[in-house]
Structures are given as structure tokens and as C-alpha cells.
Length: 72
Image (cartoon, rainbow, N blue to C red; front, side, top):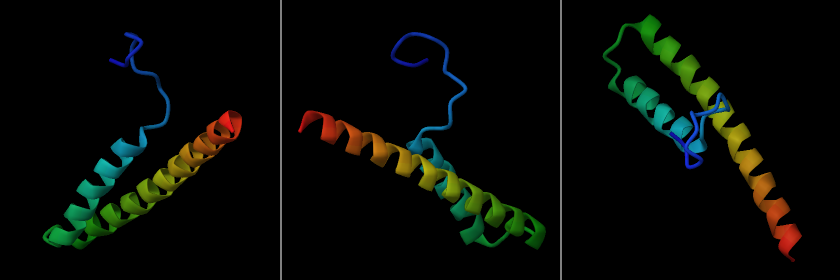
């Protein structure tokens, strides 16, 4: 539940959630114990998560810049 007391929205995952998922996926890759097909799938998943995390980070940076401009 979010701070407003409503159900979670269907928005994009939070940046921290993306990082946690990326860390889990990288740990999977680092173990190297899964079959090659699973490792390739994990690598592709990591690339998608990383791209999404970069987008979220850029959005957050833009919002922070807008706030900084509005208060200066």
C-alpha cells in the first residue's frame, strides 16, 4: 500500500525496485551454474532492466532539475 492509502498503481517500477531486480539477475549470472540458455535469458533480462533503470533515473533527474529551477 502506498502513502495515500490506496492500492498500488500500475506505474513503472520504482528505481530502487529495478536495482534490486538487477542485482538479483546479476547474481544469477555471476553464479554461472545455470544452463547456458538460462544464462543468456538472464543476460537479456539484465539488459532490459538496466535500460529501464536508466530511463527512470533520467526521469528522476529531470524532476529534480525542474524542482531546483522552480525554487531558485
